[in-house]
Length: 153
Image (cartoon, rainbow, N blue to C red; front, side, top):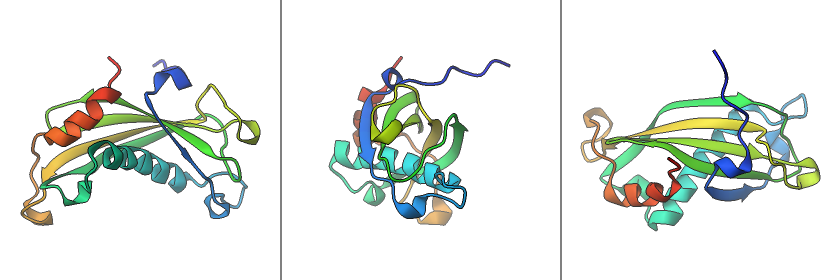
């Protein structure tokens, strides 16, 4: 099986710069694996908050994470900032699949190739019946409008 090419900045649509923190590094001096997933979650949800102007947690339909993965290409770590690139890989009836690229150049400068790439899937569910009554529902119109511009077909 052939692995997809290492992503570059041109593969992504929306951008956010995040500051790394001392505590993000592990005992080996590079970004802890769990921190990558926090960055993916932040890239997706910060975009949804900004693009919709809504508290997405309070909508009658919410996105729950159904799948995540990460491909690591190069070490990341404190103190340089990280640029997160976001693109929608698939917009379905009840789900959105995002790809997130993490970029950190030497001394915080630009790097054209991703140091890591994440995949993040939101499945939308009914939030009105509490956690036990959640069934999949169509992606809400306000979310669909926020992610449609991130598609790259």
